[in-house]
Figure (tube, rainbow over the protein chains, first blue to last red):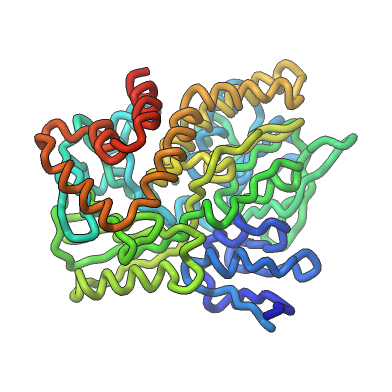
Length: 61
Length: 390
């Protein structure tokens, strides 16, 4: 399955930053209670999807 | 806030506050920035520390202590429980109070502090780090500094912006979730650790008492075992099975770096401390004491570098060297032990628990436990002996 986009819905997120730490492309930004994926940097490796303790990031095919 | 400081510290957890305190005490002008609105909140931590280690670092205020811990219990997958009575006591802290007091001590030493202050980039002068870009209450600021210190936690980006490699591969990240539970039946003087592939694959579950009938109950699972079943679901299953009448007072997610140490904690005009520097112990996940030890070293090195007018990587690498001597070596060994321990099958863990039961309870020291667990890995036992003896 090819992934077109990775999304992190803010309403489900606890803003712990674990995804930021494993992102090899520095493509996730966390500012207090806002998290966003920088789509132009994201390589769709989905390390964030694997590691999230709550299962928040999602792969959009 | 001024336009320029000697040292800017991004992040006001134990690493950042302790760095700021020691930098300010050694004569530097220091700005300490916290992205969240309140220092110490949210608490993403099991809150356990060893008494002696903490006392070596700071005069302990009794109001920080939720429980004093006198024993430990390791529970194997089949339920075999091994009690151990270490020489050393432990504390379960109130991190909210603890962190706020550490930051207050940094302020007393002369550091300026701002909350809701998010560092979103670095300033560069002649190709080297020369300050931070800051967002604070809707305004952006460019604040210059001779040294920027990233104490910005597991989610640190300060190091990456300066060219330091800090990305933790997901297989070396512990994916964690914790609930603070009330109305549960526990042994309030004992910390409990549970192991097994159905409980916490590639990690462990902890029960750290906060009161007679309340505790931090959480678990970490290895990032490469976290794709399908998430840490949250392992914890929910455990809590429903073990503490069906629990009141859930809080729930937090978090990541604990459990990989090898970083190649470098410093570059020209930049240093990293605490979780940002991946200084948590890779075996236990403990980070508070290491963060403070690193902060004490980093703050002193940074202030003296500013005073000498030399903030080059060569000068700041004194911190790298002192960190390796202080705790880095122990972390390296812990990483090797972790790689063995977290690959044990449930059957092997059960066997080890039965072997441990043959050691008299008073002699179940950390070293004897490792020795028993690693009896098929004599080189690791030798490595451990060197560290425990030195």
